[in-house]
Image (cartoon, rainbow, N blue to C red; front, side, top):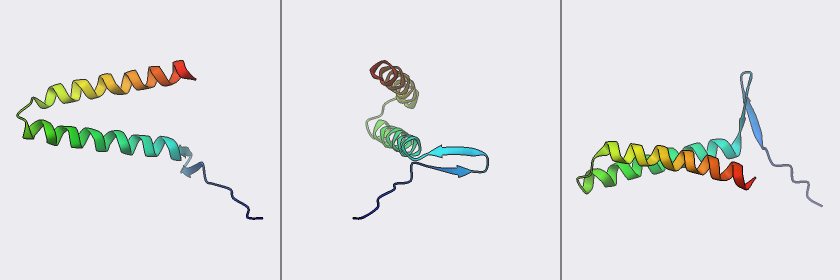
Length: 68
């Protein structure tokens, strides 16, 4: 039998970093960068993209907590 023990977190000094949180943060930053580039292509205001991004992040956090 194969023993499988995945790594769920690691330490950066005294701070514990969870892998799923790190992946989520990278995904959100990547989506924001891509949305900003698309906004520039379509001559949209970058401020609107940032405002929408803040609403999406807050809504996702509230929705996740309600689901939990």
